[in-house]
Structures are given as structure tokens and as C-alpha cells.
Length: 223
Image 1 (tube, rainbow, N blue to C red):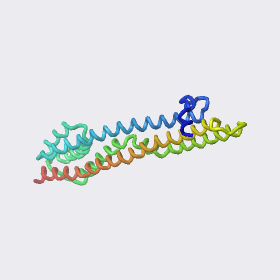
Image 2: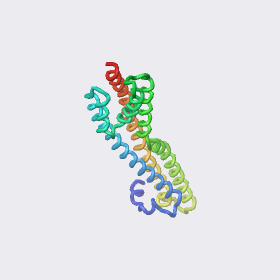
Image 3: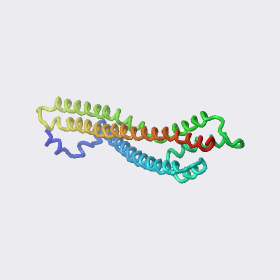
């Protein structure tokens, strides 16, 4: 059986004359290509974001006032923490303008949370596609499997003699559809969980940063 399937020509597996298996394979190949493009793009983006965060955080911790930390923010614009910093810093400036003191710390904390929410949304962009591919492609592959088995039985019913060559193409379609569905779903599922964990970790670090930001605010205006 395996030797026979290996002998089948690719033209027999990707045959537009058999529209349903052909469309199923095209959908699964397209979903797999989309999945891998998102995975590589998101992985690279998260690596750069983590590195920029570390660079900004080192400079921020060396600052003894908000003004000097703002310079560090300008030097690391790619860091998600910089967006959080900008949200908080803008509120501090509004409150300190004219009076030189902070009136409402809760509003600053809320602004910092808005910055975190905005950055998390950016980091999670396109992640829904990975989840969709991971959950849908096995069913598309299953549909192709069922259709291939139906083709195999139809070929068997129309043949005067039972032979592997009669049912082989249908079985091949079924097995290829199964394999293509799993090949698209498994990397998408693994990447969704792994990258989601990386995003969650970045979110946690931004939450921790808000505490450091508020400490610096207190040192600047109350110290």
C-alpha cells in the first residue's frame, strides 16, 4: 500500500479534474503558508520587543527623575514599555503643569493600564489567525479524508475487479488530506501557545513596570 502511494504522480494528487480534493489541498496549503508567515513575523517582533524593553528598562532604572527617564524613552521607541511610559508621563505632565505636584495618582495608574492594553492588542495582532488555523484545518482535512474514501468506494463499485490501483487514488486523496490537515494545524497550535506565553510574559513585565514608574513619580514629586 505505502509503496503504491509513493508511486502515484503528483499530478494525480493535485488534479484539478477532481475539484473537491484539489480545493481541500489548496485550502490546507494556503492555511499552512499563512500560519508560518504569521509565526515568523510574530516571533521576530516579540524578540525585538523583549530586547527593546530590556534596553529601556536598564536606562529607566538609572534615571533619578522623570525628565531623564523621558530621554531614555526617546532612545528606545520600539519598546512596548515606552508606550506605557508615555501614557503615564502625559498624565503626570497634565497634573504637574502649573502647580508642580501630583493631585491624583489613581488617574496616572489608569493611564498606565491603558498603555498596557494598547500594547497587548498590538502584540496579539493576527494571533486569532493561528487559533483559527489550529482549530479549523483538521476538520478541512477530515472532510478531504471522507471525500477520498467515498471516491475509493465509488471506484470499487464501478470496477469489475478489486485491485489496489482501483481504490488507490481515492485512498491517497484521503491520506494526503489527513496529513495536510495535521501539518497545518499542529505548528499553528504550538505557535499559538508558545507565542501567547511570550505575550503574556511581556504583559506581566509591563505590569511590573507600572510599579517602578509610580515609585519614580513619588521620588520626583514627594522625595
